[in-house]
Image (cartoon, rainbow over all chains, first blue to last red; front, side, top):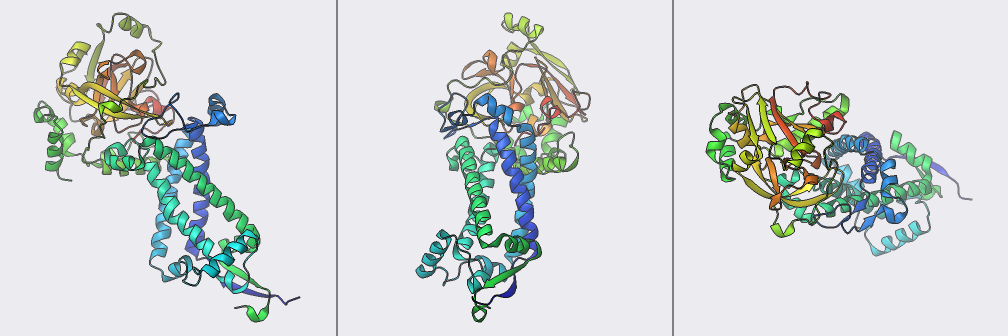
Length: 241
Length: 260
């Protein structure tokens, strides 16, 4: 059996940790309040117009939950109030995160894929490792792997902005502030539908994120998100950092 | 934003200068303060973080709306067939039913409170006033949207007909048959697309959509588009109405500002 040594690296800055947990709380509230709002109108449409009786592209009714039952389950007054409150928390937290990190070289080193990581050989082996549900070991675990980097960047710079913009496109004030934005989506109902789809993508991300955390070692991962230090497991002392 | 530009914009959108400026210096005054921070917050700010979020939402949107831009108007071909009838569809109110039986001939809209010359208008009076027709999207906070063409008298003209507002005037409280009421600030009152609508898609407004007159305040969610209008009061404080939050919806715990 190879000998095991304990190596610690400093993985998460204080700012990343604080922003991460604020984001976790606000994401939870946004999702839950979003569901509460949705249950009071459990249909989705495409285009500018949509209402009860108009051809829908999704009806909760078709999935065994009647309109009346959905209304009982939902609470849009609570939902609306908390959706807006935590939207602000989310946006301000996100801006603090970006401003705090944006001028730090370390941030780009941590988040951007390296040339080596983008090589076909590395992509192949990372895909294979993820499909086998194996944790990274040794040197390669000292930084985010390529799939991790790409998914974090996608969430931070594609899905999050999309949620915000598709939220704006549903607001009546934006029919005056920027009707072009609503047109860009192809209409108010399309924006609403895409807002829901994008939120489901985020739920998928959170699910995979949690599964990966467990595979990689939940204690070590969670601990690092609280105290910053992350333990690198190496199978072999000579190969360790 | 400069004052001059505000006036120019509003002139461009064809509300006549006379309507804006005549009669009351006070209404002109509201235009001059289009970016005033008094329009950044609801009349009553809720407690705690919820109130902070309310003000941030309203202030940020009002800043973006400070040019009093018009909302998008749609082509007549986009008008929705079967526009939904939502919420109150026929007020359970004796007086309303009597007026309805008489085809609203006896309906009177009183404009009282902090106006220089309180008046009472019949439906015919209202129809003789300057009119505006707009094809806009109705956006319900619950999620639905539909397009209709509305014809009515700008709220501004109606208030002008009452001699304009006095300097203490801050909010416009509108009462509806069936117990609903809502409050609006001057920022919305002076918007050219804020109309007291009596026509929908070229006909009189049908019963379920708020006959004989409903408000269109286009930059807000559906729950601000008060139906079955009964009377208008210009006030300096909303506290004497309902639970004192400035509208029935906010009394119920929804946002007073419904730009969303």
